Amino acid sequence: MNNSKIEVKDLINIGLFTAIYFIFIAPPGILGIIPIFMLLLPAMVGLIGGIPILLLISKVQKFGALTICGTIVSLILAIMGHPWIALIFSIPVILIADGLMAMKHYKSWKYNCLGYMLFSFWPIGTFIPFYFMRNSYLSFIQDKYGIEYEKTVATLFSVEMIPVIIITTIIGAWIGVYIAKLILKKHFKRTGMI
Image (tube, rainbow, N blue to C red; front, side, top):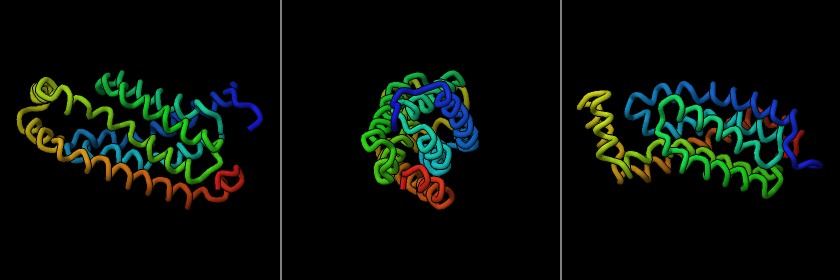
C-alpha cells in the first residue's frame, strides 16, 4: 500500500461496490416487512454482503473505503424511511470495522473476517427505536401497519431477543465470509488477503 489516500480511481471502485452491495442487500431489506425477517435482517445482510464488501476491500485497501460504502448505504436507507437515529449506531460500527481491517493493512484474513463481522452489525441501528423509543415507535407502527403487526414486532423485539440478534448476525456474517472465500479464493490470494 504505497498511497494511503483515497484517489479518484478508488472512489470509482467504492461507488461501484457500494452499488453492488446495495443491490445484494435489497432483497433481505424488502423481506424486512415480514417481522421475523426484520429480526433476521442483520444476519441476512451479513450472509449475502460478504462478496461485494470483501471485493471492495481487496480493490481499495485503504482506510475510509469501507466507511464511505457503509455510510452511503446507511444514509440512503435513512432517506428511504429507516429511522435516522440508526445512524448514531451504524456509522461508528462501520468506522470501527474499517479501522480493524486497516490495522493489518487489509492483508490479514483474520482481521478482515473480524472487521466484516463487525461491519455486519450496522443494520442493528435500525432497531434502536424498539429499545429506546419503544412506546412511540410501536404506536407509529400500529398506526402504519395495524395492531396485529404491532403486537408481533413488540414480541419479537423484546430485550430477551437481543442475544438472538447478535448471535444470528455473527453466524450470518461468518457464513458470508466463508462463501466469499470459497468463490473468490484465487482473487484474494492475488491481492495478498489470504
